[in-house]
Length: 90
Picture (spheres, rainbow, N blue to C red):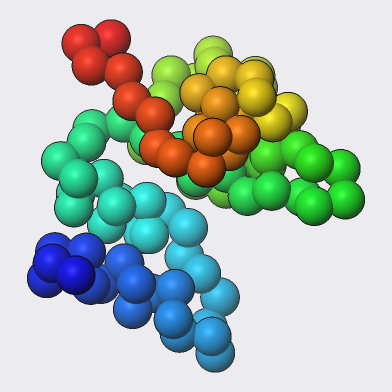
């Protein structure tokens, strides 16, 4: 594990405190040299993704990103494939 992603895993490993989703996203984006991103969590019962944090997403898009079905949009595709997705030069 490279030293620049160790803080990400340290944040997740601290079970005694609530996850600061915004801080976690900033650390992930910094580690992977990305400018834009989101964190969604899966509601196992409904099988829907719920937005927890976002960085540099236009406000008008947020209502469409709050709840996402698996397989729909970039977050849904990432969840379906269980892999990250990216767009360069968007």
